[in-house]
Image: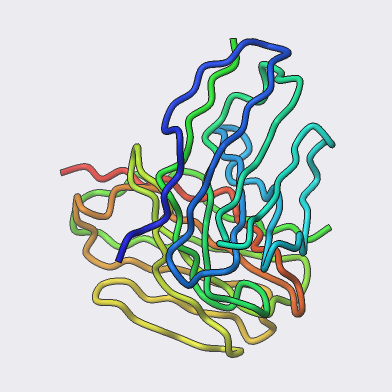
Length: 115
Length: 111
């Protein structure tokens, strides 16, 4: 079966711009989580969606937002980009309706560089 | 808020030796998961532990969940070059939808 697909793989943006990243989970998976990975901060939780509802949100500013569609595909948006937003953004999908009690399957990530 | 601490941050191992990475939480966890991320790759799920004191093995890897469900360890025996990568533990509280990751232990192997 197809894995978690994230697009685009690489992105270069200028400070102040906005960006939208996409994630298609494994077929049948309804939970999608987003993480920001940087060398200094590790994997930081952004938000988790299940059946189009955001169930949990990490400690990121309001410039970071997301949504999930009825087909479970998810997008995250970052507005007014800052240099510090440069990171690998990872999406993970899971079967789980009750929380992360099953292993996550991660996509290959989107490498965002802000210049 | 919940924090999952992981030590050591780096582990340099001679091929054939054993090593252990440790994970500690400030609060009781519902479960603990372990992931491996190869250089340039993405995290890959290894295993989940749920029960207090649980021990699971995958070939040369032994995973343990503490009795109080606040700590966990991963022990690798006879390290091989294929073990290179970063190992993350990740935990969740009961009725929470957030999986919190430790900072990871990056393993390098000397042949």
